[in-house]
Length: 70
View: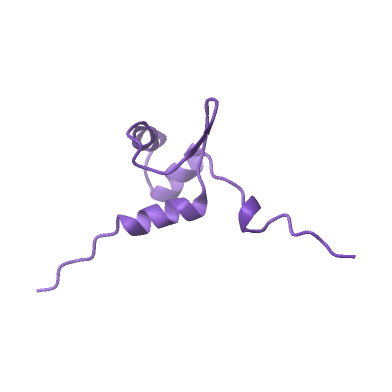
């Protein structure tokens, strides 16, 4: 008999807007503005917003700016 892993990459839990705000070190209002401007990846079910941790981390990496070398 095989067991099923319910915590694989396809079923990882999604973050709430408050969790994303904490992860980014900003307030919820700022995250809501990013969502409104469609500048951050998110899922929407009715009025609920949810965020995939891996997508948020990729989004952060994409917006990383390396310091200039002299």
